[in-house]
Amino acid sequence: MNICVFLSAADLDERYTRPARAFAELLGRRSHTLVWGGSDTGLMKVVADGVAESGGELLGVSVEFLAHKARKGLDTMLVTKDLAERKAELLGRSDAIVVLVGGTGTLDEVTEVLEMKKHRMHSKPVVILNTEGFYDGLRRQFERMQAEGFLPVPVNELMYVTDDPETALDYLERVTTTAE
Image (tube, rainbow, N blue to C red; front, side, top):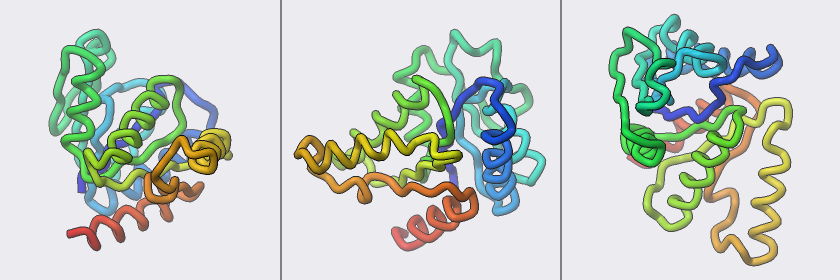
């Protein structure tokens, strides 16, 4: 399975890198392909290293203005002209999406993917790996949107939230196998 991971390229504390590395190693050991922003910095590097060292494949999708940070020697590396094209490639080349901790870029990616799913432009499972409660506020916001009528689709139909890397991957493997 090709699993797109949205995440930060920043250097982060071990409380965020440890679960991300654990998830990456599971991806690799279970022979999945990491589809990600292609960066060789920060948390993106941690995850790519974990997948590669555990036997998984890497499919990077960088963007021209960030190509200088791109990882070398990948199984596949694409370079797009802008962020919109990058997001389209990431989604188009993946079977599922996992969201790890990140900043505004990660938030942009996940909200676009959820908006597209709401409109049935894709049906790929989206998992939020809620490390250290990082996305508690975002989940509450989506629940409020649903409760107050701004979100016509139940939150649990748009995304699955867990704080455990193995539970996240088990869920993806179960729902993508069931969908086939």
